[in-house]
Length: 348
Image 1 (tube, rainbow, N blue to C red):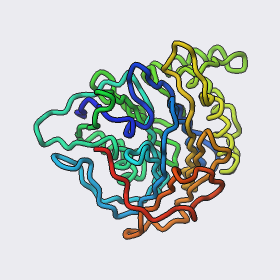
Image 2: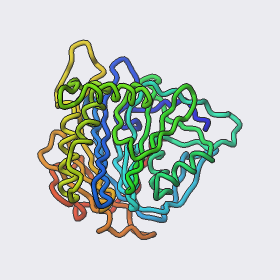
Image 3: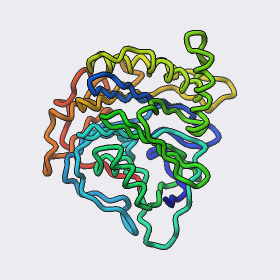
Image 4: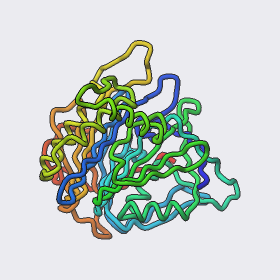
């Protein structure tokens, strides 16, 4: 794949950019339970609160990857719930088939430049996650498309040219995870049920080697305790492999929430001289089997959820929005709090 270098604003980057005061935190965990239970948890970390609204998009929405020029155009096959930062760019989400996709910071990413031939379609980061959720039901389908398609990525500059460096993970109800990571101008893809944890840096292959060392040390004896990426990876990996798997969805969500708490960065935490560590601003937990998407702002008391299977997602159904700027003090299922809305306007 040929991908352009990415430059984009804070609104587009899902709380991750590379700058003098840079973020270096976000964690993702997949719990594989019995009876086809697959639950994906994620923390989003940033130095200031991230305005994030939740949208529900039905099937049959006509969409495009850029406002003009070579682009991808599609009609959504699947309805989805998406988390939209600053009402301008999709950070993550889950579709009605239970496919989950999350974008996390990865400062070592190096993207291949666009061909410049005028024919290669360009994808804005504002809608990249939605492209996959709209079009694919499984990780295998997404992998096959990536193996056979070429596109460039675009995002506007922020703060005089701040570059957003990300990697992504997709998981479906089978528990298979696909990690998309760009190193030295090449797209590296890692696909397995064994890949249950993703944080930030170093590159994923190196992170596996670090975790292998700690497996020999033995987590029952000692686990690394800082908020740095490698330490969070090791802690999450140990705990996700040492929790009961014969659990129902409610217990599984609770287990994932407890793991996310063990890798979250406390609100207000600052390490003098280390501007690259940031507080956890919110946590999401996606139950891929029941298609329930849980969400909690760190500054609020309760977790709430959107149940996709209790919503009308047929073509022609309205776009729905949970506007957290008006209130974020929600509890339980908030399907009845969703309001008809226009689609969000991407920050191209």
